[in-house]
Length: 204
Image (cartoon, rainbow, N blue to C red):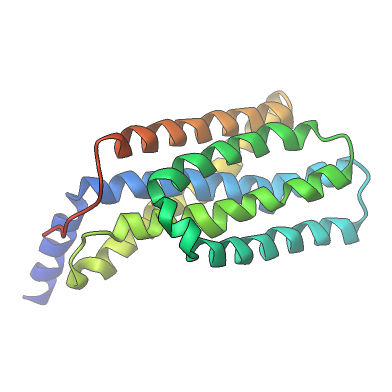
C-alpha cells in the first residue's frame, strides 16, 4: 500500500509544470557554475601563469562571495525586488561572467570576476529552489525536492563534458560563449514566465 501511495505522489509531483521549469533553470545554473567557477576558470588562471596559491584564492573568493550573497538574498532590499527581478538579472550576470573570464588579460581580473558566480550560488540558486517548492503541499515537498535535485544534477554532469568537448575541438573561449548563450536562454525563459505572473498558489 505504501509503495502505491509513493508512486501516486511521485506521479502527481511530476505533473507540476512550475517545478519542472525551475528545476531546468537550476540545471542551467548548477551546470554553468560547476563548469566555470569550480573547474575551467581555474585552468584559465593557470594558463595566465597564476600560482597554486592564486588558484586557491580564486576558490575562496567564490565561496565567500556565495555566502555573502546568500545572506543578501534574505535581506529586505533583495526580498523587495524578489525572484521576478533577480532570477533573470543574475542569469544575465552569469552570461557576462562567461564572456569576460576567457578574455581576461591577467589573473587579477579573473579573481575579481569570481565574485559574480557567488551571486549565482547565493541569490540565483536560492531563489530557484524556493520558486520550485513554492505552492507545493508540505507532504509532497520531499518528493518534489528529490526531483528538483535529480534534474539539476544532470547539468552538473553534462555541462562540464560538452564544454570540455567544445574546448578540445575549438577553444575554451568558444566553450564559455556557448555557456553564456545558454544562460541568456535562462534569462529569456524566466522573464517570459514572470511577465504574466504575480505569485504562486498551493499546488495540490
